Image (cartoon, rainbow, N blue to C red; front, side, top):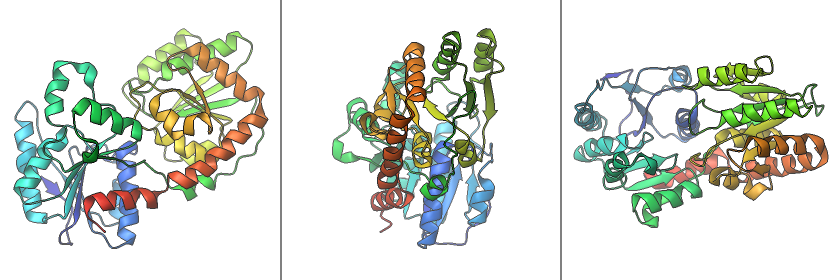
Length: 371
């Protein structure tokens, strides 16, 4: 185990898989900034030393960062429990918040053995019931070792109660948030580019559905509407998406921009934000960012998107996994700018009302005993 430094007693310990500039690490950075302003000491435990995208931001906040070398095989599970025990014995944290679900059980075992009374696990995606026997093992780790399971949406909370077999009172839904000021400051021209510019910000992974979006762009082209598509994010499906774009002869119209740190600037250049997702999508913080920036939205009608977009009031919802429905939704929004503007204005206000970092931090703080 390695650590940068530690100059505070009884901190809050937050566990992350890595410091990649997406998802849970971004959420942790927001929480940490807020809590540091309130005088809360925070330290990080990372299960991997790569990637290190957000390390400079955490170091700028003087946050100690601990990393572990787990190795492979079954031995890594008791090793994680042991390393967690050793770290918690040394730090004496007030609470532990673990973002890697499944791994959190071994972290909690070590933390509780070291005397930590409050351990919470974060649930950001649907419980993987489709994995069969593997889920049966995973389910055993869902609740017994933690005080609370903190879910990123009511949709995920309901699934957690159902599939993990826990009581509702053992869970809480706390919506993810973003730096609303950073995104509401986006200045958009209001003029649609030619060709119209579509974009999706998301990991290139299986719980997203970029393939349906690429197919929808091909359908629109065949129907006489040429658009440009930006796919922003990185992940294991990059080569697959590049191959699909080439197969559909869209290589010039589909741009894979990779992981980016200038999302507000990119949102300012978008005519339409499209979030094509599968039912196992947990929340979709990129949706909130687009809402705050005032970009019209088309999204898959799955539980998480329905919840974030207030049942379709803040963005057009279309049948998931259906390129034809997605193409029709894109065409509808582009052809009716007045309705798109009305939904975008409602979305901006809804984001301000529901998805602030302060509200998220307060809710987490209540569960972690920080207040």
